[in-house]
Length: 252
Ligand code: ADP
Image (cartoon, rainbow, N blue to C red; front, top):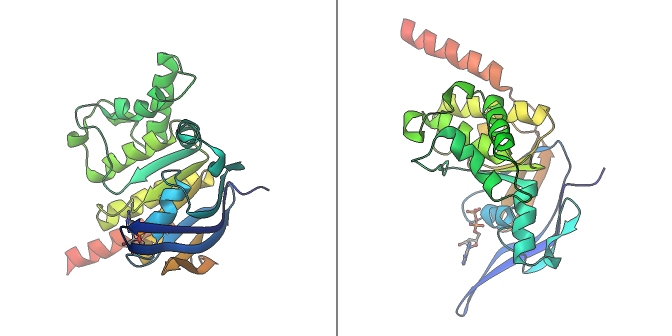
C-alpha cells in the first residue's frame, strides 16, 4: 500500500530579519490510508508547522512532501490549492463557520470552489449526506448561533467531508468543547475512521489522543516518539462511564 502522506526529511526555518527559528528539523513520516493519527507535543514543538505543510498551506524549506503520491514541491500555487481542495478536509478549533448561513449552506461551501462544478441538486444531496453522517440531518436549516458548540463542530466536520477528501486534518478540534462533547466528537471521528477515512489530528490533550490509533509526540521540531495507542479508548464506552459518574455525583 502507498502512503497517503509521505514527509521526507522535512525542515522548516523561519527567518525574521536576522533571527532564525528552526521550527521543524528533519521529520520523516508515512501515514497510510485508514490510519487515525494524533500529533502531540508542547507549545512551540513544531506541530502547527508540520500540520501546515501536510495541509498544503505552506512549503518545506528543505525536504519533500508527497500527498497521495504527488510531490507538492513541483506544483504552482493554483495546482497546490486544487490538490488541497480535492484531497484534504480541514477542521479547526474555532469551527470557522459562516454565521449568517445555515448549516446546510456552510457544508455546501467547499463545493463552490471545486472544479468541475457539481449541479446544484447534487451539491445539495452531498451536503445532506455529510450532515447525516455526523448526525445532524434534523438541523440543516439552523444557523450556527442556534447550534451548540458540539453541533457546530459537527457541521464543520460535515463541511470537511463534503468533497470526499482522502484525509481529514483536525487542529485541536476539541479545544473549545467540554468533556462530554469532546468524547462525542471523538465518537464521530472513530465512526468515520471505521468507514475508511484517514484522520490526522493535533491535540495537546492526552485523553483525546487515546481515541486515535497512533500517537506521534514532537519535541523541539523533531519526532520524539511514534507508537500505536496501547489502550485505545472507545467513545461509546467512555460516554457510558461518564454518565454513570455524573449520576453517582447527583445521588451523593
Ligand atoms: P506548535 O504548533 O507545536 O506550538 P509551531 O509549529 O507553531 O509549534 O512553532 C514552532 C516554532 O516555530 C516556535 O518556536 C514558533 O515560535 C516558531 N514559529 C512558528 N511560526 C513562525 C513564523 N511564522 N515566524 C517565525 N517563527 C515561527
